[in-house]
Length: 475
Image (cartoon, rainbow, N blue to C red; front, side, top):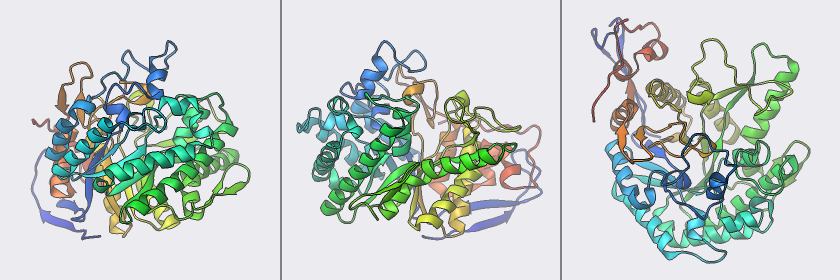
């Protein structure tokens, strides 16, 4: 795991804080992976053969704001320019996804030009010292698969295995780490319950669990296909794991409901990969060749939600407690300690290495992201200091991108993107992350320069001067 040091040096008054403390630097292991994450549909642009393109361009489009995905971040033509930014930021890893609809535009018809373009992008990662982690399915489907009822059709397992085999044969030598499916439970919920994603003819609870069962079969088939072709490759899934709690004034039924949601949303998928058996609302089902089909656990962590029963529209409360820090568009409460709780929970439950495969906040003004970064990374440092094997961190996201049903109304990027002009602008948090990645550390010095409000949070007893203001660095 490498080393971890809490280094203390005397220091005077600087950057407006009171100086009545020792200078503290929290170091990460030398083999820790510092990365960002993107997904194909959100950054490539003009994925016209995807179910999302049809969904967002329909007359009844549910997309917020005035802009559709369109050119997105123009990665299909200019991914290398943003990978240059990631390298300049000190990253040594990047998580990206492949667009199935590009690679296999028609059933059994593979596009050699699309495969060549992905090979060029993956090679560009390696050339810049960015180890790629590649996701096979990140929310979007080929139109031909959607027409066949995608994950609600049993035949999808054969299709997904065939797609995986093609990718492994053509690109596998460049992919050391694989994610088979991104956020499978979220994907199923957003399609079949909340209907915020493109959905097929059938929705509801029955369709939800049917899709989950078939995604488990797809994952198992993909895992064994990859491991047969590339035995040394590491394979897992990226799981959206959030803190679900009853409100502080909630009753026993609310607390029971919160426990049920935690079990189904956070644990049921990974439990199935661990044991081979999926436990739903009622009963369970065992799947052949599923048990043990993961080499690591990917954790996507964003926020804490409060729950009550019966659930409100959207299933979670959108009223926050006093003093809560809430991100743009009421996306969620910033609750950094929840990341430590999730790491501890995952380690004790599965005992496998972990990667934080997504973590970020929508914050166009960059008013809370610097503090968000420092506090969440402190939670990871804390976990590593207790020997929990967190091997890397992939911030969501490198650049602003098309955020699914929220369109361009929420900005997660360390780097701002104008979707019309394609202009890039480093936010202060990008400069902060650059310092973190290049030094493998977080420190009170960084907090004083970029997020003075975090001094008292991360180093209790220290208070910023009333005149202290976050630094606004230049590129």
